[in-house]
Image (cartoon, rainbow, N blue to C red; front, side, top):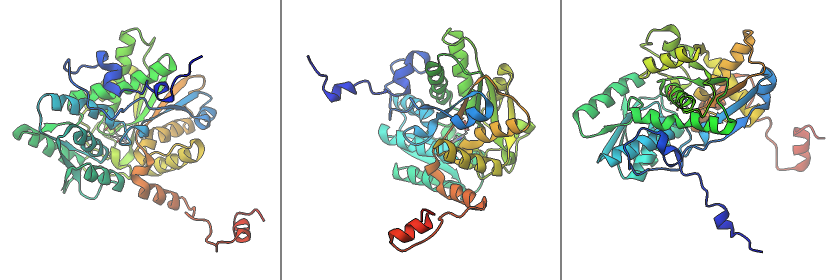
Length: 367
Ligand SMILES: *Cc1c(COP(=O)(O)O)cnc(C)c1O
């Protein structure tokens, strides 16, 4: 009898989204993958939301990616293609996560990362990531939309490659999340809910679900429902927001780059765009953490807030399969999470005691 050495039992490490799905991605043949083994994220069953909806509700936990958000899926593709094409430097506009991801993949690729962010609106965790990965960070007196205009202008006039989701290669990488969902569930879900900011992600998911259906790898495509923050809801109102405002900084975008693609995803899937308030978002963030053990950043909870709002409004999901993508990790922005917790009227720390068992037992209500 032979036994397999422990090291060999682990040789099937997930290879990252390019190598796992290369034949389904439109990237130049032979592009070497620059990867941190992104993707392969868990689909976690939510007992809490399944109970509320009388449906099967799954969370696609994208905070489990290498830099803590789904942006890594698109970034492995964009950086691999830019490197292969001979780029020396890459630029992006960002509300935080794109810059964190770009800086990490640029470090791995040996490219120089240049980041444009709105002054004072970046969560501390995301800023720390960009800086530690070696990005040159430029703060702009303006919002994300202004930053994107500058990034496009720089890439147009100077030798830097633009890796925002206006770069179609980003969507090629990001659509792999839809493939993973179908691969895991065995078919597409009935509904797919997610937060929407610049609208690249909803467009990429729709590409992925549609491609799988065309290939016969799924029997259907889901109804797509996108949720925006009330203060930054251009896809809901149909008009750009000149001064977008929300605590959910990752979706604080007034004029989404993928507006047309996102509308097509809504129309072709029979879906909708709806808005939720910051209070609903922060409350959904707390409830998800407390019920399901999944800690997400504020923007990531918009899909959960949306589902709860729909249920309160009498919408029924009973009997269906629902996937809610939670887009980024809660540790990126602990300040907003704790402020939200405190503003719900709860105290952060229950009691302060001396180091004494009896005192601890009394404080805990055990004695
Ligand atoms: C980028 C981002 C979003 C918004 O995705 P879009 O593709 O811009 O619509 C939502 N949540 C998080 C955590 C993000 O980083």
